[in-house]
Image 1 (cartoon, one colour):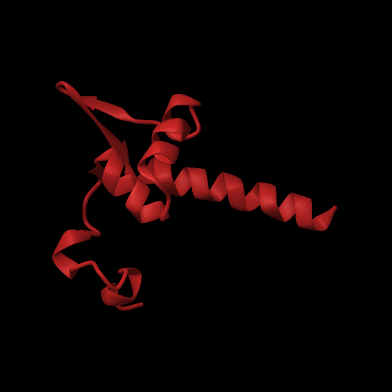
Image 2 (cartoon, rainbow, N blue to C red):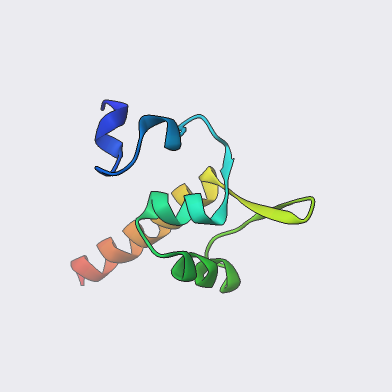
Length: 81
């Protein structure tokens, strides 16, 4: 899949680096297409893990993938019922 297909119309290809291993909370929210407040809620509830870097925190991209995989499994279980 070409990289540009993963971008929203108002994003530049340089703004969405697929090689990053950890992203800011704002970048994580944008990748999930959710709001910043919702992302902070997921982090607060322990649904998405973060890693401290000095005085800031980063969201490992793998944590986003894990979150999506868990919710896909949950959705599949509800559809089968």
